Image 1 (spheres, rainbow, N blue to C red):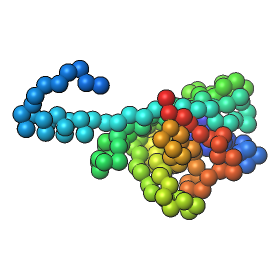
Image 2 (cartoon, rainbow, N blue to C red; image 1 turned 90 degrees about the vertical axis):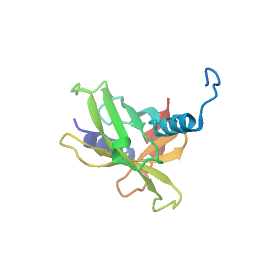
Image 3 (cartoon, rainbow, N blue to C red; image 1 turned 60 degrees about the horizontal axis):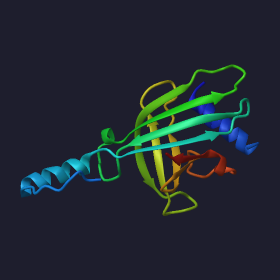
Image 4 (tube, helix red, strand yellow; image 1 turned 180 degrees about the horizontal axis):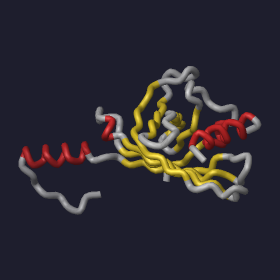
Length: 159
């Protein structure tokens, strides 16, 4: 199964459904530390269970690394894992990785923040889009950046 099946299944289901201590640093040492801390990748992990027409759900984990302050796509990476629960055909777990980018605005909300996932390998090179509902919630949305009718069922929560 491919993630496109995940999206198609979800769409069909939706349409049917601290510091250790302080130490004085010289100016250049402090700048090096600040630069190192600023360039350290930020990691966020989100989990949830998407609906599935043929199974009891698709356990989904999305981990993104990097932040919007870095310009290099190499600094923005993701992994996405999907596991089908109680599926009659017992498909193998799916694993995707690649790069992500941040988009601003959707047709319905010009201030919305969207994460665009671009898989780097596999047969399914289609991009996936997640609306940042709030700091702790991502919602899978359509490629045209519109929300699914029952988008609440396509949400992942920060871990």
